[in-house]
Length: 192
Image 1: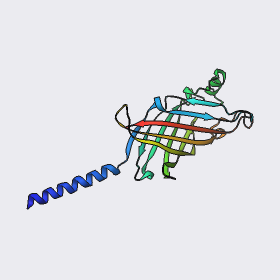
Image 2: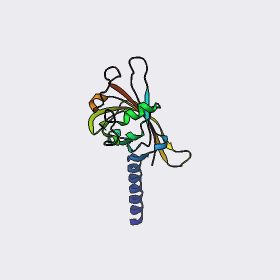
Image 3: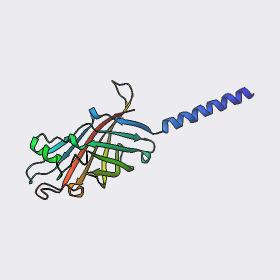
Image 4: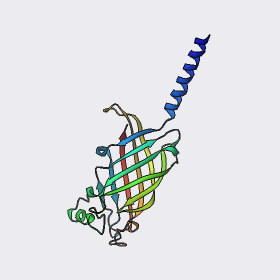
């Protein structure tokens, strides 16, 4: 009789353990080789140029059952900025813009995650550029989640977009002729 009770208790504990494992948040590391950060702005009302950043790193904690427990931290090396126009890239490195010698990184650290649709989320957090921190909201779409077909490890992918005012980060040169508003688009792949 005792052995039957012990077996039943063991099975119950295994069941509870399995449920808690399924409900637990998973932590992923952002893959810099499959992450793209692109900023765009309006130039004199005629065009919308872009600049991209590379070597982006960070961590994602995603809890599908309780999205509000999810979080993200992202680090963007500002020295990797590339406008594909050398003179402009050089200017972006200087004090009027990213001042990369003094501020080699920009960061985003989430504070609140809200599910807004089947695969969409609002992620509110602190954006720090040039040592100045402001609140920003990323509009995020879950692209996919599952086993990575090549690495054979759990993987996840998101797209995100936000708009900031560069003047709030001490980068107001040429405003309003070159737009104050800058749209930042991120696509990322991350693995456990």
